[in-house]
Image 1 (cartoon, rainbow, N blue to C red):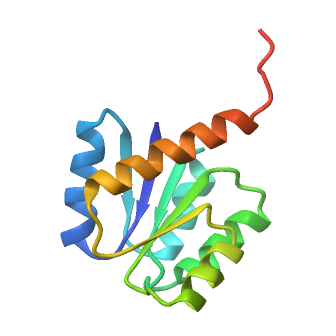
Image 2: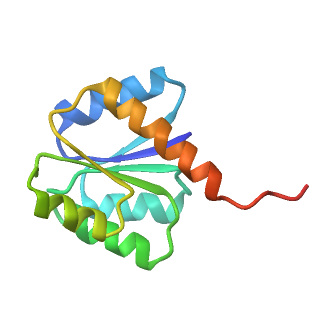
Length: 128
């Protein structure tokens, strides 16, 4: 699976990317919302792990921009914002899931697997 991590904190992004690569995913890191948008325009990712509090372009705005551009990647928001209203705003912006920091890598991996199962069920069959 091709994954884009949009996260400005290296203490989170680098270990997360390392863990996902260990699980045999292709992973890239964008350090702000504008760079995340540019990466997403250049490559079709399967999943975007998106922080909300980003420099240049916040995660909510980036998520809305991606969805308005009909970008179909799964989006899982990873954020320290933990109120119910924050979660509702994130999901209503177009996120497929929302996970509050700090989180366990095992839970993140399980959520990614669940999103992929759900995504595979909704895709039309490919004719060959």
